[in-house]
Length: 362
Image 1 (cartoon, rainbow, N blue to C red):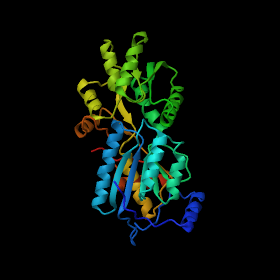
Image 2 (cartoon, rainbow, N blue to C red):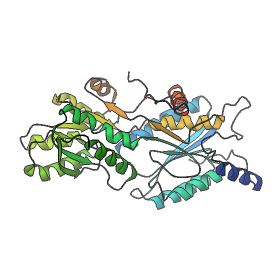
Image 3 (cartoon, rainbow, N blue to C red):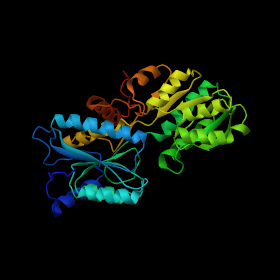
Image 4 (cartoon, rainbow, N blue to C red):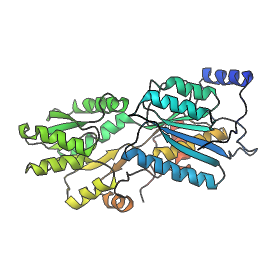
C-alpha cells in the first residue's frame, strides 16, 4: 500500500530537535505532528507493520493488527495501514532493506517485529531520525529511540516450568524442551529455567531437546531419545505439548505433564484427550500488537509512555481451557484481548511501578 505523505518536511532545524530529544532520552514520550488535531486526538495516521518472517503465531498477530487498525480507521484515527513480510528466512538484511523502502513512503507509525535485535538498530534509528513514531514488537532492542512493546521472556521461562514442577510435586525426571536456541528470547527463557531448577534438588533433567517451539519438531526429538529415558514426569519448556504426548503414546508410555501450544488445534487436542495431570499452556501473546498500536496512538497524543511496555503472557489452564477452545479457530493462537482502556491501564501501571494485569478472558 502506498502511503500518502502527511508529515512535515524535516529540515535542519527539525533534525537538530530530533537529535536533542534522542540525547535527552525522550524516546518513550509522544510525538507532535500535523496528524494531531487541536484537541490532541491524532487523526489520519498511516501505519506500517514490518514483519521478519511468517509462522502461525505471527499470522494471528497480523490478523489482530489488521482488525484493530480497521477499528481505528473507522474512528478516523488511522487513514491507512499495511503489513509487509520481509523476504527470506528471518533475514535482518532483507528486513532492513524493507524498512528503508517503507521509510520512503513516510508512514506516521512504523511497527517492527525485528529479525535481529542488534542488526536492525541502525535502520530503526534512521526511522526515528526521519520523525517516524517507531514501535518495536516482540523483542528487546538496545536503541536510543523507539518504544519496545513485548512480553517478559524470563517470565515466560518461569511460566513454562513452574506449573510443571508443582504438578509433579517437585520431584522426578524431566526433559527440557528448548525453543529457538541462539535467539534472544530463548536465552532469557532458558536462563530463568536454570535459575528455578536450582531450587528443586529432587528434580533431575534427564535430557534436553531442541523442539524449536514447534509441536512436530518436539515429537520427532522426543521419539529419537525416548527409548533411553527413564520414567519422565514432565516435559516443560517451549510449548510442543501435543507432539510430546503423541510421542509418548506411540511408545505405549503414559503422557507426562506438558506445555501445550496455545493454538486452537492443540487446545482442542488437550481437551478431547482428557489429559488432566497438571498440563497447561503458556506462550507469548500475539495480542501484544493491539496494545502496541494503542501505545503508538498514545505517543501521537503526546502522552507519557514508558520506553519499554512489558506485558503479561497468555496462560491457559484446565479451568479456562473450554473457554479458549470455544473462541479459537484451528490455526488461531490465543491472544489477550487488549484494547485502548486495558492498554492505558497497563501504561499507568508501568509508570507507577505496579504489576500489569492481562485483560480478563471472557
